[in-house]
Length: 518
Image (tube, rainbow, N blue to C red):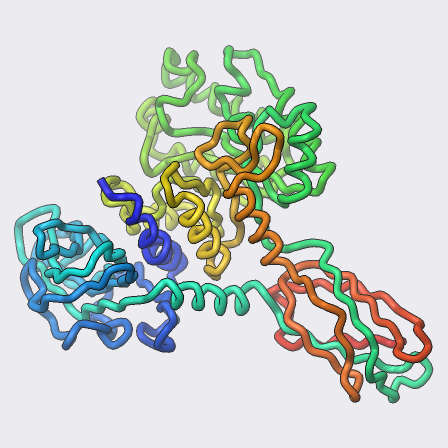
């Protein structure tokens, strides 16, 4: 079992491996980053020749190819440092083999750093890392799932980061990917050539573009305190159970949509976007009880009725659908129907039923977990290639109860917001009445420490700009979070004012200029 401390490294490094490999950021050059920055590069492709070692190898002296399971250099690890590890790996024979990189401490304890599917005839990129819980020396070892053949390793890299360096990198990335710098030019309304220096400018952000939200349950129905707590904070939601098949049709032929209808209406009234979760769930434990007794023909008819029912009912009201949930870990419908094309068929059907919504493959353990062989990054990449074109969201973010729960929760949320591949975050959390692992509010809807953290981040990730003034040339530059703004400009002598609505997004060119007449 991994200790809870390992979650820090999971957040810091392994989540980046999965997301970047999925997006195939092959244009990035490994090692082409500043000394304190995390190198986002990851390659999902098996290459003819290995690329350069990240960070010039970091702590590793020399980057030549070696054969065998033990890398010929002992490394020293320091307590409380985050270590990013990478290597290019190939096997000498066979079609492929799963290779695990691990650190064997002087005490004999072994800690996994990452895995990759290695092949013969090309080089696969293994990326991961560890957190050192104490100062020790260690050997880097490579463990094959299949013991036959040799392991070839090239261009190994090990790079330590402090907590401060990690946070600094996050802040730099947030400024780059979640903000835009704009310029205002203020001129006289009667004489366009005359600039207005000293004009007072106020920015009021009325909407944030990045979707940041929380799951919701039927406990919100007719609960004013819950509704006020939720609508004052979040811009997107996922219903915990209320759109699942077992909740909508507990008895065959008797559909019930009263709760999700109410919840959809509430969300729409308050401008909250909704993710549809889910049309089908592949886990055999979570089916309507009557489904288990159906033969393949009956099940095929039932699944067709199900997708038509739920998606037609909410067509145009949701931003996305989790069409086939947890398909990497389970295959209930494929096995029951004897048809491995079940996911592809229903993704195509979903596209026909609600073409305006984004279709998602929703999975757990997408952050690599050594206890879960299905969570190998390459498995996610292969599955995504089958159903291409989907963005990446963190859809069910939570942390199991432990003494450092809030700290780890903050690290996950900050890393997700900083990562350029992530297009939205939904926390699998809520008020005490919902009984989540992470409780954001107590029975009276007052914040818990986790709730205080969420409110802090909501405030931090909005632009709260003090009143500014244009310079002598009537110019003003400012960096703003993506969102919609009301801009008020006041003339310095006449006190006349004008208002302007502007939309700041990643599609806006840097230093875009807005001309205001006053």
